[in-house]
Length: 417
Image (cartoon, rainbow, N blue to C red; front, side, top):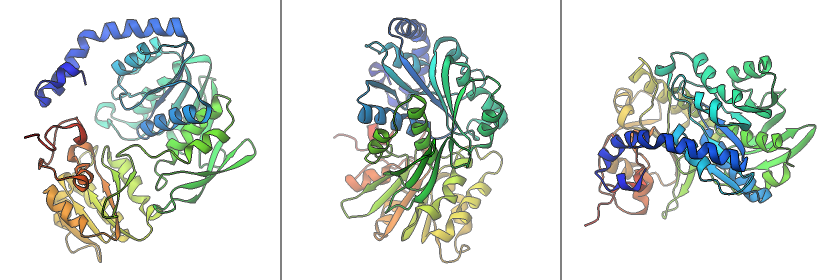
């Protein structure tokens, strides 16, 4: 967010920000196009309904740590204006840009095809995010696959063929482009076989590429983000680099904060935080993956889920029923509050609690010191506060919160006297 806007009331600043950038957007675009012409950057664009931030982080850090490449990472800020801003900040010839790219509405990615020539295009998954804008997953695919239209003639696409939409796109290859497939599918060019994925051992797998096998260790938990890991490795392969330095760098790279990240508190408790984004379709995958993550007791805090359509509370109840066999306790907050209240005493040995008091939730999980605390929600619930409370007391009790700003940067978390 612009520093001038930050000095205003935070809620008003977030409302005014799009108008501010509407005014300067043309300037950003002209400067970005000039930098592309002058410096000829090597651009990797990454999009998808899920996992693009992690793939962007992993690829940029692998390139920097494994190959000492000068990398600019356009991480997190993935809208049109931020893509232009990333490009206008370049300062050296043929610099590598690894850019996360959003495509949240029909026609949004047309600017990319017009202005941003890609060397590598990475597509992670196609799911139900923004389904209300697109109406169907096929329409989402049509928009996100415009990334392939932005490729240079010698460019390469990296597609996750575990996703049925992208598998079809790869098989048809109507654009007749260079293509590297990745996934757990037997015919993937960059393929993984899982060795372990629980939260204590972390995700380990064997990677198979062009007849060679590589043992891979990571700091990740479960298999949900394996797609992002393979996306980054596929891009390394597409660039023609040896895989060994990337694999060595990967072993020490931590997940993004609040994207399946593990945090140990002063009391020795472990929190698995995934409270940034929770579309219904991806939350179902997360629920199915709990059996892979589990090693000992589990307590799950479930908050707001997006893109539930007309299913409402039923979607939350379905998720809770699926995860209950793996948990000692489920705590439903915000959007999950009503579903938890309805399911109390109905899910066998799993205790169900409904609470919208963040301080009460903190007390409940603090009493479960021998369990892994898994926190899953969209950003509206602001459940990152549960980790912040293990560091120092907080004042904020808002539930839900409509601010986009994260808790760590919000002045309401711990107001200064």
